[in-house]
Image (cartoon, rainbow, N blue to C red; front, side):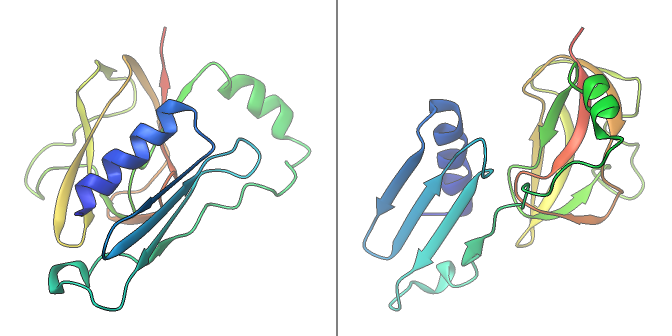
Length: 162
C-alpha cells in the first residue's frame, strides 16, 4: 500500500462519516478514527518484515490537539470565520505556494477558485503532491507560509464560498 492509497483511504473515511475503520494487510495495519471532539486521527503500524519501499513511510500521523479552550477574543473571530470554508492539509509534508521557484504562485488572496483548481503542492517523501480545491469560491486568507512544514489536517486556506 503506497502513500497515495493511504491518502485516498483517509479522504474516503472522512467523507463516509464512519467513526473508526481498521484495515489489516499482511505487512501494514491502519486504524483511522474520526470524531468531532477529538479531531481526526490516523495510525499506521508497520510489521517487522516490511518490503524495502515501505520502510520510508511514516509510522504514525499524530492528531492536531484541539482541546485547548478558546481565547476570550475567539468568539468574535469565530463568528466571522464561520462563513468561510477551511481547506486543510491531507498529508504531512512541506507546503509550497509555487510549482517551481521561477513560477508564479498558484493562488493569491482575493483570487476566484473553482473545484479542481490546484491551490498548492505539498512535498512528502520527495514526492510533490498537488492539492486541489474541493470547493468553489474566493481565497480569503492563506494560513501557512511558503516552504513551511505542515501537519495532517492543518488548515491551509480560508475560502469564501459565496
